[in-house]
Image (tube, rainbow, N blue to C red; front, side, top):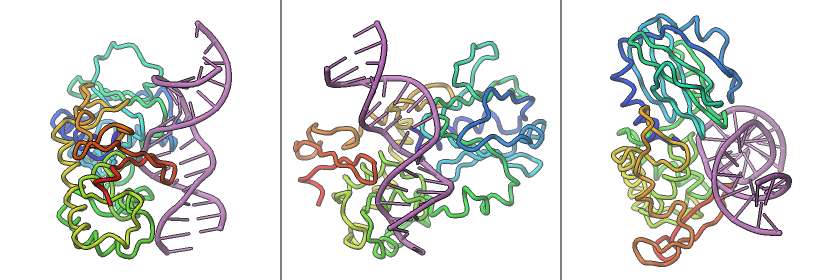
Length: 273
DNA sequence: CGGGCGGCCTGGAGGC
DNA sequence: TGCCTCCAGGCCGCCC
């Protein structure tokens, strides 16, 4: 499941291969993703030079020289990878891009929670999918001080809070659990009960788990692979996520699983208060 | 108005 | 081996 680190890895590996090329043709096999793929997408991007590949939250952004930006979201099960032109189709290969440098990219997404759309580059921040988005966790604007100031006002559980894209983007279930473990805070603790010191630690630990995962090539649970279809290694280093009843890596107590807002939360009863 | 939660979607796992 | 149920989860939209 691609969260911020996985999307960032895809961006880094894709960028040097596709910047300065253009899309020669696009073939759609299915257009009914979470949002229907716009009918005029081809017309807006085919034939124009790719000038940048960016990331905002879990969205991958491909900028074209004609001021159009292709917006790609991988949802839960999406994959974007290079392939040979004669490879047989998987039933979930929905979109195929042929590039001017002879490479071919496929967008595959069994669950179809993904998004493929386009907008005028200058309008991106006002786009419906982007206008409400909060801070980038790896940016310098995301600080312990700011995290403390906003979570102080929140009555909701801290885990829900750090997963809320309105405040900080890109932190999904895996990394929220991991960062709270490192910060020794239980996921059920209310935002306003997090102290200033803890908020500073939580901020640092969110940055730390995201950066660690990027270094290890991301977390590959079920679906994630990079553009060369290689899985990451971070799943081997998870401290609490998906480790119910397994010993805590710090104190050996069995890891506990609870459900919050229909999502599994994992924590150590002994280490996290 | 903050925020909880249902629903979208499919494959895989587990129970019987 | 097959059928059923449940679960995974990002994100919008609904609703309290």
